[in-house]
Picture 1 (cartoon, rainbow, N blue to C red):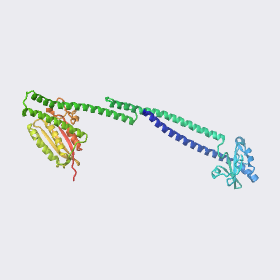
Picture 2: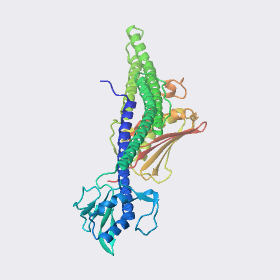
Picture 3: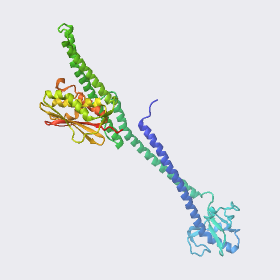
Length: 468
């Protein structure tokens, strides 16, 4: 089954809202207009009855009864002819007789005693009906009520007016609905257009096309969606570039030890070398290098996936640092580099870490510092409590420093500021990446600061162990 287009769904939703809104307003307007019109008609009849009441009071005063009052139907004043009303005594002129007026007279109890049409005699009126009548009083005594017009329906003229009013409301509702539907079509197109373009770009991106971007336009939400898509596409391109670079770097790092192993084995097979300990040791060393490289890549993958196994325990980080410095002292002595441990303040509290992982982090940072520190230089390790819940460890050197353009990438896998540098001169490029992942696996943060020509400082934080 073919899917309904998004813009058509929007139009359907807008149409439903328009029908409910316009229909509801039209119904309320119709009821309100009908109610107000009925009130207007009733008030007009009441005013007419009040004007004619003196004529009926005069008749009752002369006859002493209501019987025979039907004959007054032919002498009721009507506007427009300029004849004065007999017996009203109020000087109201401009009225003439109208045979079209219907009236009824009810006694004080509400029972109809006179009907100009003769159809309602004997019927009792409600208090609501009597409220729109004019009381008839003779000599201060209530003798009945005068009511003008129809009681259960409008006159022909009134009904015609109400029908035209309802027709006008219907036409207005249809025009408003049509205008709203037109706006809904335009709005649905403006909303669905960017979404449709975004869907097409997403499909192309899923098919492997790169360099795709969508226009950031439309409403704030649609523009934000387009901006998010562009950011996602850019991130995917960067990840793809990093993936390709990673594969190339891994292949490069594996090529050298494999070439050494292959060359030595071929020499042994061809009889160039004899299978002695001296000829087998290089093969073994390259095999160990390959094993270490694979292990480091595996640990990096586990750390990035949040699955790196950690054996957390309370560790005295100062003693841990002393142990690492002791192990690297022979390497530092070979180049007359001074290794120092500094405690800027009081000895910090124990930290909750995996001792083996943090020892490797510190070893990687120190080995990196020793590699770039000149002879008779200095490498310093500082440990202090930077915050109530964190201990900070700093590794500083006075080497050549790192170029500003290289500093943001020092924690990337296989990254070297000098791409021509060999493994012997710069390692595999995984040490700092591993240090970053392992520190973050403990919840800490690591950063690098450097001034070209003055040295570099790496600092990382570790969580303070909670008191049991």
